[in-house]
Amino acid sequence: VNQDRGVAHWPFNSSSNEALFCVFDGHGVGGEKVAEQCMRSLPYGLLQEGLRLRADPAATIVRAVLQMDTEILKRRGGRFATTCGTTATIVYLNGTTLWSACVGDSRAVMGYGANGAICARDLTVDCKPDMPEESERIRKAGGLVTAGVPGGRPSRVWADGKVGLAMSRSIGDGECKKYGVIADPLIARFEIEPASSPDGDGDRFLIVASDGVWEFLSSQEACEIVASEPESATKGCAKLVQAAAQRW
Image 1 (spheres, rainbow, N blue to C red):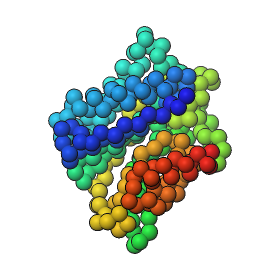
Image 2: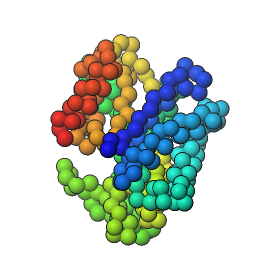
Image 3: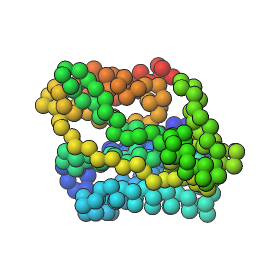
């Protein structure tokens, strides 16, 4: 079962000056259902807070994600997402200002031109259990963290020694929530400086993808692949997916 879900809204919030992009990567048995509910409900929740979203994007997105997590964990009397969940990466644009929110290890990357070369700028930080601040919180809550191996197995947080989760933040995963895994998104703000042409210097394109891409391609490699199709986002996306599948 493909557990990844994605959604793009433009115009958004009744404005052609605003856009919303989200990726949800489910995991565990039934994780695709958690990702599906987030895909359908989270953008709607943000629309319901449209004026607050414009006034205070960071606080509004955090509130919407935490509310989504609460709803997921309550569903079916708490049995819906006990040992499954999803990542959530949200990118909200208003004019030339961008806010990113990340829960888990789906990543948002900006591809930009500099002196004729294509470069990558990460807009999110992958939430991994062996990050010092994440590891400390998990261990204080009684969870066990095992380190990852470069190019091999990822770091994991273990809930009661039974459920191993390869991220330190997620929506759902009720059992892991008892051991320091949280749903609070990491928020960042960026100012976009658009390139004057598809192959010029400045910000050119945005990639929002699950680790189906990032497990096999670096941010720089992904941007170089997409940039090889400067006239077509559709072709750039297709080449990126094909490259990740070939690596896999």
